[in-house]
Length: 373
Image (cartoon, rainbow, N blue to C red; front, side, top):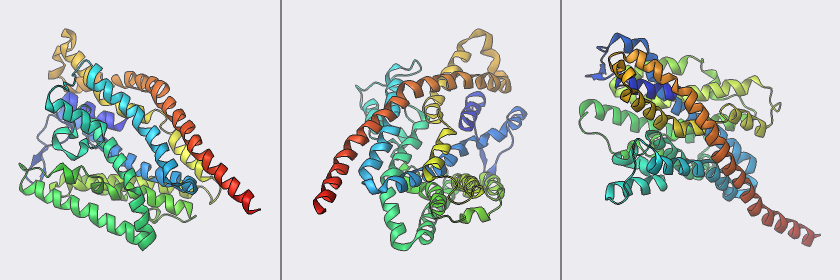
Protein backbone atom coordinates (compact mmCIF):
# COMPACT_ATOMS: atom_id res chain seq x y z
CA UNK A 1 0.00 0.00 0.00
CA UNK A 2 2.77 2.46 0.82
CA UNK A 3 4.24 1.84 -2.64
CA UNK A 4 0.80 2.69 -4.05
CA UNK A 5 0.89 6.03 -2.21
CA UNK A 6 4.32 6.76 -3.66
CA UNK A 7 3.10 6.12 -7.20
CA UNK A 8 -0.12 8.11 -6.63
CA UNK A 9 2.08 11.03 -5.62
CA UNK A 10 3.88 10.86 -8.94
CA UNK A 11 0.64 10.72 -10.95
CA UNK A 12 -0.91 13.70 -9.13
CA UNK A 13 2.09 16.02 -8.83
CA UNK A 14 4.24 14.88 -11.73
CA UNK A 15 7.01 14.01 -9.24
CA UNK A 16 7.23 11.50 -6.41
CA UNK A 17 10.61 12.67 -5.11
CA UNK A 18 12.15 16.04 -4.35
CA UNK A 19 14.46 17.00 -7.19
CA UNK A 20 18.16 17.67 -6.70
CA UNK A 21 19.78 21.07 -6.28
CA UNK A 22 23.43 20.15 -6.44
CA UNK A 23 24.26 17.80 -3.58
CA UNK A 24 21.00 18.28 -1.64
CA UNK A 25 17.27 18.09 -2.31
CA UNK A 26 15.43 21.13 -3.64
CA UNK A 27 12.53 22.16 -1.40
CA UNK A 28 11.28 24.79 -3.84
CA UNK A 29 8.11 22.84 -4.60
CA UNK A 30 4.41 23.67 -4.20
CA UNK A 31 3.28 23.80 -0.59
CA UNK A 32 0.67 21.17 -1.39
CA UNK A 33 3.45 18.74 -2.27
CA UNK A 34 5.17 19.37 1.05
CA UNK A 35 1.92 18.47 2.84
CA UNK A 36 2.01 14.95 1.43
CA UNK A 37 5.80 14.72 1.14
CA UNK A 38 6.06 11.88 3.72
CA UNK A 39 4.64 9.64 1.00
CA UNK A 40 7.89 10.06 -0.96
CA UNK A 41 9.20 7.34 1.34
CA UNK A 42 6.55 4.94 0.08
CA UNK A 43 9.14 3.34 -2.17
CA UNK A 44 10.82 1.85 0.91
CA UNK A 45 7.97 -0.65 0.88
CA UNK A 46 9.88 -2.58 -1.78
CA UNK A 47 12.93 -2.70 0.49
CA UNK A 48 10.75 -3.98 3.34
CA UNK A 49 9.44 -6.65 0.99
CA UNK A 50 12.99 -7.75 0.11
CA UNK A 51 13.86 -8.21 3.79
CA UNK A 52 10.64 -10.15 4.45
CA UNK A 53 11.33 -12.25 1.37
CA UNK A 54 14.82 -13.14 2.59
CA UNK A 55 13.37 -14.16 5.96
CA UNK A 56 10.60 -16.32 4.50
CA UNK A 57 12.78 -17.92 1.82
CA UNK A 58 15.40 -19.01 4.33
CA UNK A 59 12.71 -20.42 6.61
CA UNK A 60 11.10 -22.21 3.68
CA UNK A 61 14.39 -23.76 2.60
CA UNK A 62 15.26 -24.82 6.15
CA UNK A 63 11.91 -26.61 6.41
CA UNK A 64 12.32 -28.47 3.11
CA UNK A 65 16.06 -28.81 2.50
CA UNK A 66 15.94 -32.58 3.00
CA UNK A 67 14.06 -32.76 -0.31
CA UNK A 68 16.63 -30.72 -2.22
CA UNK A 69 16.53 -27.55 -4.25
CA UNK A 70 14.28 -29.06 -6.92
CA UNK A 71 11.21 -28.99 -4.69
CA UNK A 72 12.22 -25.59 -3.33
CA UNK A 73 12.40 -24.03 -6.80
CA UNK A 74 9.17 -25.67 -7.94
CA UNK A 75 7.43 -24.02 -5.03
CA UNK A 76 8.99 -20.64 -5.80
CA UNK A 77 8.15 -20.93 -9.50
CA UNK A 78 4.45 -21.65 -9.02
CA UNK A 79 4.22 -19.00 -6.32
CA UNK A 80 5.76 -16.24 -8.44
CA UNK A 81 5.79 -16.88 -12.16
CA UNK A 82 2.26 -17.90 -13.33
CA UNK A 83 0.55 -14.86 -11.69
CA UNK A 84 3.33 -12.65 -13.03
CA UNK A 85 2.91 -14.16 -16.51
CA UNK A 86 -0.84 -13.58 -16.53
CA UNK A 87 -0.37 -9.97 -15.40
CA UNK A 88 2.37 -9.50 -18.00
CA UNK A 89 0.13 -10.73 -20.84
CA UNK A 90 -2.79 -8.58 -19.67
CA UNK A 91 -0.71 -5.40 -19.53
CA UNK A 92 1.06 -6.22 -22.79
CA UNK A 93 -1.94 -6.99 -24.99
CA UNK A 94 -5.27 -6.31 -23.25
CA UNK A 95 -4.80 -3.20 -21.12
CA UNK A 96 -6.54 -0.10 -22.57
CA UNK A 97 -3.73 2.36 -21.86
CA UNK A 98 -1.14 0.78 -24.13
CA UNK A 99 -0.47 -2.37 -26.07
CA UNK A 100 2.74 -4.02 -27.08
CA UNK A 101 3.60 -4.24 -30.78
CA UNK A 102 5.67 -7.39 -31.02
CA UNK A 103 6.08 -6.91 -34.77
CA UNK A 104 8.87 -4.39 -34.20
CA UNK A 105 12.16 -5.02 -32.46
CA UNK A 106 11.38 -2.81 -29.46
CA UNK A 107 8.14 -4.58 -28.59
CA UNK A 108 9.68 -8.03 -28.99
CA UNK A 109 12.63 -7.02 -26.80
CA UNK A 110 10.26 -5.83 -24.11
CA UNK A 111 8.21 -9.02 -24.23
CA UNK A 112 11.10 -11.49 -24.30
CA UNK A 113 13.09 -9.71 -21.59
CA UNK A 114 10.03 -9.73 -19.34
CA UNK A 115 9.18 -13.35 -20.11
CA UNK A 116 12.67 -14.45 -19.08
CA UNK A 117 12.79 -12.02 -16.13
CA UNK A 118 15.90 -10.17 -17.24
CA UNK A 119 14.30 -6.80 -18.04
CA UNK A 120 15.89 -5.31 -14.92
CA UNK A 121 19.32 -5.45 -16.60
CA UNK A 122 18.61 -2.91 -19.36
CA UNK A 123 17.58 0.72 -19.01
CA UNK A 124 15.12 0.52 -21.90
CA UNK A 125 13.22 -2.42 -20.41
CA UNK A 126 13.71 -1.71 -16.70
CA UNK A 127 10.36 0.08 -16.33
CA UNK A 128 8.77 -1.30 -19.49
CA UNK A 129 5.21 -2.70 -19.62
CA UNK A 130 4.65 -2.31 -15.87
CA UNK A 131 7.01 -0.15 -13.81
CA UNK A 132 6.64 -2.41 -10.77
CA UNK A 133 7.87 -5.53 -12.56
CA UNK A 134 11.57 -4.70 -12.15
CA UNK A 135 11.57 -5.93 -8.55
CA UNK A 136 9.97 -9.25 -9.55
CA UNK A 137 12.94 -9.91 -11.84
CA UNK A 138 15.46 -8.96 -9.15
CA UNK A 139 13.64 -11.13 -6.62
CA UNK A 140 13.69 -14.13 -8.95
CA UNK A 141 17.41 -13.68 -9.62
CA UNK A 142 18.02 -13.52 -5.86
CA UNK A 143 16.33 -16.92 -5.65
CA UNK A 144 18.70 -18.17 -8.34
CA UNK A 145 21.81 -17.09 -6.43
CA UNK A 146 20.43 -18.27 -3.08
CA UNK A 147 22.44 -21.56 -3.30
CA UNK A 148 25.57 -19.44 -3.81
CA UNK A 149 24.65 -17.49 -0.70
CA UNK A 150 24.31 -20.73 1.27
CA UNK A 151 27.67 -22.00 -0.01
CA UNK A 152 29.36 -18.78 1.11
CA UNK A 153 27.77 -18.97 4.58
CA UNK A 154 28.85 -22.62 4.95
CA UNK A 155 32.41 -21.82 3.91
CA UNK A 156 33.11 -18.68 5.94
CA UNK A 157 30.18 -18.43 8.36
CA UNK A 158 27.23 -16.08 8.54
CA UNK A 159 29.00 -13.08 10.06
CA UNK A 160 31.77 -12.96 7.48
CA UNK A 161 29.30 -13.67 4.67
CA UNK A 162 27.06 -10.77 5.70
CA UNK A 163 30.06 -8.50 6.02
CA UNK A 164 31.24 -9.51 2.55
CA UNK A 165 27.94 -8.92 0.77
CA UNK A 166 27.31 -5.75 2.83
CA UNK A 167 30.60 -4.33 1.58
CA UNK A 168 29.69 -5.45 -1.93
CA UNK A 169 26.26 -3.78 -1.99
CA UNK A 170 27.17 -0.68 0.03
CA UNK A 171 30.38 -0.16 -1.93
CA UNK A 172 28.52 -0.35 -5.24
CA UNK A 173 25.80 1.97 -3.98
CA UNK A 174 28.19 4.61 -2.67
CA UNK A 175 30.14 4.48 -5.95
CA UNK A 176 26.88 4.95 -7.88
CA UNK A 177 25.86 7.80 -5.56
CA UNK A 178 29.14 9.62 -6.13
CA UNK A 179 28.90 9.01 -9.88
CA UNK A 180 25.34 10.40 -9.96
CA UNK A 181 26.48 13.46 -8.00
CA UNK A 182 29.42 14.32 -10.21
CA UNK A 183 28.07 13.20 -13.59
CA UNK A 184 24.26 13.23 -13.29
CA UNK A 185 23.80 13.22 -17.06
CA UNK A 186 25.51 9.84 -17.44
CA UNK A 187 23.48 7.18 -15.62
CA UNK A 188 25.19 4.01 -14.46
CA UNK A 189 24.38 0.88 -16.44
CA UNK A 190 21.46 -1.21 -15.24
CA UNK A 191 23.77 -4.21 -15.41
CA UNK A 192 24.96 -2.89 -12.06
CA UNK A 193 22.05 -0.96 -10.53
CA UNK A 194 19.49 -3.53 -11.65
CA UNK A 195 21.49 -6.65 -10.81
CA UNK A 196 20.59 -8.89 -7.84
CA UNK A 197 24.03 -8.21 -6.32
CA UNK A 198 23.03 -4.56 -5.96
CA UNK A 199 20.27 -5.75 -3.58
CA UNK A 200 21.95 -8.83 -2.13
CA UNK A 201 22.61 -7.58 1.38
CA UNK A 202 19.20 -5.91 1.60
CA UNK A 203 17.61 -9.29 0.91
CA UNK A 204 20.07 -11.29 3.03
CA UNK A 205 19.40 -9.13 6.10
CA UNK A 206 16.03 -10.89 6.40
CA UNK A 207 17.65 -14.29 5.83
CA UNK A 208 20.11 -13.54 8.66
CA UNK A 209 17.22 -12.85 11.03
CA UNK A 210 15.69 -16.18 10.01
CA UNK A 211 18.98 -17.99 10.65
CA UNK A 212 19.17 -16.55 14.16
CA UNK A 213 15.54 -17.44 14.76
CA UNK A 214 16.12 -21.02 13.61
CA UNK A 215 19.09 -21.28 15.97
CA UNK A 216 17.14 -19.85 18.90
CA UNK A 217 19.39 -16.79 19.01
CA UNK A 218 18.57 -13.12 19.46
CA UNK A 219 19.30 -11.40 16.16
CA UNK A 220 22.19 -8.95 16.03
CA UNK A 221 19.71 -6.41 14.64
CA UNK A 222 17.60 -6.62 17.78
CA UNK A 223 20.39 -4.86 19.66
CA UNK A 224 19.70 -1.77 17.56
CA UNK A 225 16.92 0.65 18.67
CA UNK A 226 13.84 0.47 16.46
CA UNK A 227 14.33 4.10 15.42
CA UNK A 228 17.99 3.70 14.43
CA UNK A 229 17.68 2.78 10.74
CA UNK A 230 14.64 5.01 10.02
CA UNK A 231 16.61 7.91 11.52
CA UNK A 232 19.40 7.30 9.00
CA UNK A 233 17.02 7.13 6.02
CA UNK A 234 16.05 10.83 6.06
CA UNK A 235 19.57 12.35 5.94
CA UNK A 236 20.62 9.74 3.37
CA UNK A 237 17.64 10.72 1.20
CA UNK A 238 18.49 14.42 1.43
CA UNK A 239 22.21 14.06 0.60
CA UNK A 240 22.79 12.99 -3.00
CA UNK A 241 26.00 10.91 -2.61
CA UNK A 242 24.24 8.78 0.02
CA UNK A 243 20.74 8.62 -1.50
CA UNK A 244 21.43 5.18 -2.93
CA UNK A 245 21.73 3.86 0.64
CA UNK A 246 18.06 4.53 1.40
CA UNK A 247 17.09 1.10 0.06
CA UNK A 248 19.42 -1.03 2.23
CA UNK A 249 18.71 1.15 5.26
CA UNK A 250 14.98 0.58 4.74
CA UNK A 251 15.59 -3.16 4.32
CA UNK A 252 17.53 -3.18 7.60
CA UNK A 253 14.66 -1.33 9.26
CA UNK A 254 12.30 -4.03 8.00
CA UNK A 255 14.63 -6.80 9.17
CA UNK A 256 14.87 -5.09 12.57
CA UNK A 257 11.06 -5.16 12.86
CA UNK A 258 11.01 -8.87 12.01
CA UNK A 259 13.75 -9.51 14.57
CA UNK A 260 11.72 -7.70 17.21
CA UNK A 261 8.67 -9.81 16.46
CA UNK A 262 10.66 -13.05 16.58
CA UNK A 263 12.24 -12.15 19.91
CA UNK A 264 8.88 -11.55 21.60
CA UNK A 265 7.96 -15.23 21.33
CA UNK A 266 9.77 -17.70 23.63
CA UNK A 267 12.13 -20.00 21.78
CA UNK A 268 10.30 -23.02 20.41
CA UNK A 269 6.86 -21.57 21.11
CA UNK A 270 6.04 -20.91 17.46
CA UNK A 271 6.99 -23.62 14.93
CA UNK A 272 9.06 -22.39 12.00
CA UNK A 273 6.34 -23.25 9.50
CA UNK A 274 3.75 -21.37 11.59
CA UNK A 275 5.95 -18.28 11.64
CA UNK A 276 6.25 -18.35 7.87
CA UNK A 277 2.50 -18.84 7.49
CA UNK A 278 1.79 -15.96 9.88
CA UNK A 279 3.97 -13.53 7.94
CA UNK A 280 2.41 -14.74 4.71
CA UNK A 281 -1.08 -14.17 6.11
CA UNK A 282 -0.26 -10.51 6.72
CA UNK A 283 -0.49 -9.89 3.02
CA UNK A 284 -2.68 -12.56 1.46
CA UNK A 285 -3.35 -10.46 -1.64
CA UNK A 286 -0.21 -8.33 -1.40
CA UNK A 287 1.55 -9.99 -4.35
CA UNK A 288 -1.51 -9.61 -6.59
CA UNK A 289 -1.89 -6.02 -5.38
CA UNK A 290 1.72 -5.27 -6.26
CA UNK A 291 1.39 -6.81 -9.72
CA UNK A 292 -1.72 -4.78 -10.56
CA UNK A 293 -1.57 -1.51 -8.66
CA UNK A 294 0.52 0.73 -10.92
CA UNK A 295 -1.33 0.11 -14.24
CA UNK A 296 -4.70 0.41 -12.43
CA UNK A 297 -3.53 3.70 -10.93
CA UNK A 298 -2.41 4.95 -14.35
CA UNK A 299 -5.76 3.98 -15.86
CA UNK A 300 -7.59 5.91 -13.15
CA UNK A 301 -5.33 8.87 -13.86
CA UNK A 302 -6.23 8.78 -17.55
CA UNK A 303 -9.95 8.53 -16.79
CA UNK A 304 -9.75 11.54 -14.49
CA UNK A 305 -7.74 13.52 -17.01
CA UNK A 306 -10.22 12.87 -19.83
CA UNK A 307 -13.35 13.53 -17.76
CA UNK A 308 -14.48 17.19 -18.14
CA UNK A 309 -15.65 17.34 -14.54
CA UNK A 310 -12.15 16.53 -13.28
CA UNK A 311 -10.15 18.27 -16.00
CA UNK A 312 -9.25 21.09 -13.62
CA UNK A 313 -7.67 18.69 -11.14
CA UNK A 314 -4.25 19.34 -12.69
CA UNK A 315 -4.34 22.77 -11.11
CA UNK A 316 -5.33 21.22 -7.77
CA UNK A 317 -2.78 18.40 -7.33
CA UNK A 318 -3.63 17.79 -3.67
CA UNK A 319 -7.28 17.19 -4.56
CA UNK A 320 -6.10 15.14 -7.54
CA UNK A 321 -4.03 13.01 -5.15
CA UNK A 322 -7.09 12.52 -2.94
CA UNK A 323 -9.18 11.27 -5.86
CA UNK A 324 -6.45 8.83 -6.86
CA UNK A 325 -6.49 7.38 -3.36
CA UNK A 326 -10.04 6.20 -3.99
CA UNK A 327 -8.45 3.85 -6.50
CA UNK A 328 -7.21 1.83 -3.51
CA UNK A 329 -10.59 0.17 -3.17
CA UNK A 330 -10.74 -0.70 -6.88
CA UNK A 331 -7.19 -2.04 -6.83
CA UNK A 332 -7.83 -4.11 -3.71
CA UNK A 333 -10.97 -5.60 -5.27
CA UNK A 334 -9.15 -6.44 -8.52
CA UNK A 335 -6.30 -7.89 -6.49
CA UNK A 336 -8.67 -10.13 -4.54
CA UNK A 337 -10.18 -11.45 -7.78
CA UNK A 338 -6.71 -11.97 -9.25
CA UNK A 339 -5.59 -13.79 -6.10
CA UNK A 340 -8.68 -15.99 -6.18
CA UNK A 341 -8.66 -16.76 -9.90
CA UNK A 342 -4.92 -16.83 -10.70
CA UNK A 343 -2.67 -16.85 -7.65
CA UNK A 344 -4.49 -19.50 -5.61
CA UNK A 345 -4.86 -21.97 -8.51
CA UNK A 346 -1.17 -21.51 -9.32
CA UNK A 347 -0.18 -22.33 -5.73
CA UNK A 348 -2.48 -25.37 -5.74
CA UNK A 349 -0.98 -26.55 -9.03
CA UNK A 350 2.49 -26.17 -7.54
CA UNK A 351 1.51 -28.29 -4.53
CA UNK A 352 0.24 -31.09 -6.76
CA UNK A 353 3.38 -30.94 -8.87
CA UNK A 354 5.60 -31.09 -5.77
CA UNK A 355 3.75 -34.17 -4.54
CA UNK A 356 4.45 -35.87 -7.86
CA UNK A 357 8.19 -35.22 -7.70
CA UNK A 358 8.34 -36.02 -3.97
CA UNK A 359 6.45 -39.32 -3.93
CA UNK A 360 8.85 -41.25 -6.20
CA UNK A 361 11.74 -40.19 -4.02
CA UNK A 362 9.95 -41.19 -0.83
CA UNK A 363 9.02 -44.55 -2.37
CA UNK A 364 12.62 -45.06 -3.45
CA UNK A 365 13.87 -44.27 0.06
CA UNK A 366 11.28 -46.62 1.53
CA UNK A 367 12.32 -49.43 -0.80
CA UNK A 368 15.95 -48.85 0.10
CA UNK A 369 15.17 -49.08 3.81
CA UNK A 370 13.18 -52.29 3.34
CA UNK A 371 16.07 -53.69 1.31
CA UNK A 372 18.46 -52.99 4.16
CA UNK A 373 16.14 -54.77 6.54
